[in-house]
Length: 426
Image 1 (cartoon, one colour):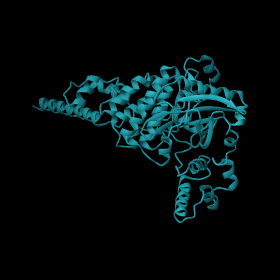
Image 2: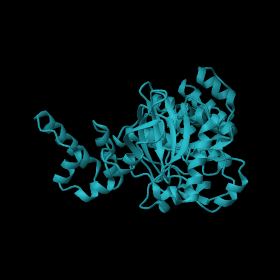
Image 3: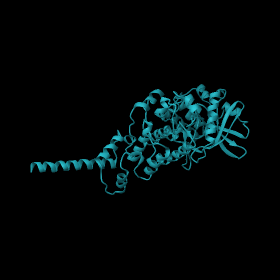
Image 4: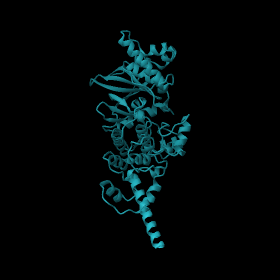
């Protein structure tokens, strides 16, 4: 199981440098600051009329060796791309990414004269029936989904011993790319993107598919701001009892964003696991930090199981109480305390985006009181009801609405005490 590294990396000017910059950081051969310094050096050299490839600058600076660069591979001389130049109907252009299971290439679909992305399983995995089965399952899952916020599947096939999956090419970047630049999303932008992905998940869930690997790397953003959910590599049909039984006891997902039930390897993982991972992604976007950190994947996953979540508005005081409450509800360790479905989640996300109080996240509280408070009207206050609400939100710092109610209770109590003292002393 692969783990995303800490937010690192930097996008560069050319396709080859973009890939190389990410690759050396992901391989822990260089830090983001070292890559950034080399990019600045590259820019100065270009301005002076002596352009130099990023790989050469990294080697000359003593950050990596020539053999390490060769092992990582550059899009310009990638052996796989060379051997796949003759995939019928497609022209491979350049490598644009790589993951634990496959590499992704930018290509042209000749019949329609359009740019696409092709995910290719390496030869060593193409010879493994289990990996091939999972790879083909990704293609089949993606083909059954048709939504503007999901990367579209186009074709699957096999050529020269390589299995490939053709999909929509997204001209943009991922949320992960922004986080590598230490960007913290403002609440409005984060909500806009998360709502789009929640709609994608709602569609996926309605079709019976659980994504199981929602994370910043799998959220792509087009230049016009459209968010698209990518990579159905771990997707599974919710009612696939055979797959559930085969996977029982095994943790599938990415440690920084994995749900507690996925950590436990339970067989009946359902749609609420995606809600948890989307909440962890939202948390990272608005705080700049992953929910839990640790020296190893196992340590991180144990924290998902046992360690209390620091409320996101404790790390970023600019966040509204509503967004913090929704995020905490999404990330409840007990899945029965999360949103029951993606539709309910969307209701709260959309309310918070309009500046309204979330209702589902406060279901133990009297919704009419919240509605009246939001509109500035007076409402009858039930102290017992508030106590129940406060108990349902452990660790909350309290926002403007909660604090106001609590102060009101205290003032009322003080007034009653004063009146009693006057009666007794009088």
